[in-house]
Amino acid sequence: MKSIAVIPAERDVKLIEGEEPKLSSPSDVKLRMLEVGICGTDREICSFQYGTPPKGFDYLVIGHESLGEVAAVGPAVAGLKPGDLVVTMVRRPCLHEECVSCVSGRADFCYTGDFTERGIKGAHGFMADIVVDDERNMNLVPASLRDTAVLVEPLTIAEKALTQIWSMQGRLPWACPHSAAHGLGHCHRAVVLGAGPVGLLGAMALVRQGFDTYVYSRETAPNPKAAIAESIGAKYVSAETASVDQLAATVGNIDVVYEASGASRLSFEVIQRLGVNGIFVFTGVPGRKAPVSIDTDLVMRNVVLKNQAVFGSVNASRENFQDAIRDLVAFNELWPASVQALITGRYPLAAYHDLLLGRPTGIKNVLAFA
Ligand code: BGC
Ligand code: ZN
Image (cartoon, rainbow, N blue to C red; front, side):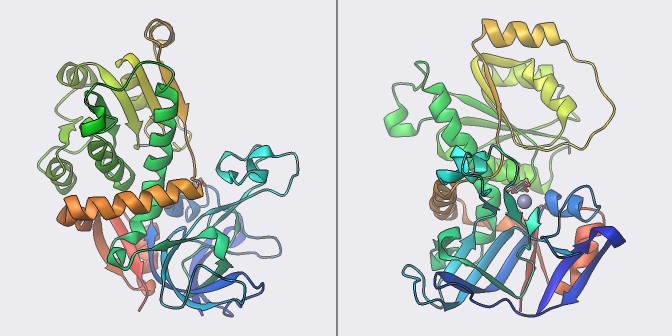
């Protein structure tokens, strides 16, 4: 069996031949991998910024954005059968009884930090011909999503953010009178920072909820990312041609910021323009660079005087995966060409080196297994 692994101690990334994993418990499911997406996290692991091999291994098989086809099931598996399409979740709970999050099936809110994540931290990932996991970590995907379900995992980031936005904005009168007909976001303006896959999928989710959505990103338009943003009814604003102040003047009261850029300086510039009763969600994980100065008095005054909320969000629950699958079906009905356009390249496993270590290109690149 072939897989792509990093060997942190040797600072190496390579295609390795290993033994196929086997069904080891009655509720295990064996998947033939179909597609695995490549994201910034994988690239950072391949530059050895993090990524931890499982106990007893000197290498880590990477990959966490996946689509597989069920090849075999254990005798206790009830919900999946050979041929089904499946997206497997990433994080597994820590084993501490006192971790109320992990104990309640919300490892995405793990307290102890001793969780594992397949392809990232302490557990092998999905860039492998064959993957075995417990049925409880898998989500059945409709056959109609065969070509796009590899986008489910990056979409879960927006789903988790939105679920939290609804619950936090529920603390105040927020929904407009037309929300029943036009979506919970109707009458509200959202700014997405970044036009990578996480940003554009987030923009799709926001538009579908009725938000007047702006995507603010570096590259000047026209460009393929701007074209996708506009094709779904969002407005693309380039940071090269419009300052944050100009962005704020165009948008009006910024009700939601969905940060998907990993750019901290930009984020703290935009936070200063967050509107009355606004909410700002961080999803990016910036590398550590030199400190920058920000007007902390202004930010603090605004947070208080404008009743703002600022939060961060990582990983996703089963419910967030289910929401992502449902939304992806809807996106494919509303904007089939735009969803397809997010996937800018499909490559054989052997192309891993340039994709992981070369200059980033396109939007979402995918390893497609023959
Ligand atoms: C993955 C998450 C994971 C996070 C931190 C992201 O790329 O999508 O599932 O929790 O990295 O490791
Ligand atoms: Zn990812």
